[in-house]
Length: 54
Image 1: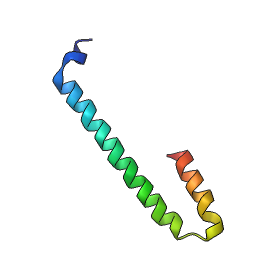
Image 2 (image 1 turned 90 degrees about the horizontal axis):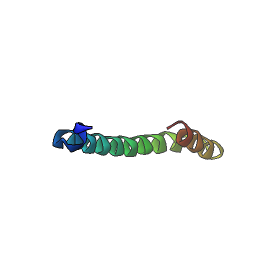
Image 3 (image 1 turned 30 degrees about the vertical axis):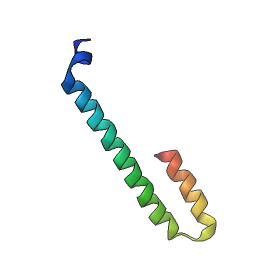
């Protein structure tokens, strides 16, 4: 359990957390753009599947 007191471990965890947030936002934007090109009756279904699979 010594790794919990290591600054490098906390920096790594923070870096990974920030990257996950940024990539998650990127995925949401990408899915929104793609689902916006679908017919109106299929957009909601595509958004629901995207949230489910993400």
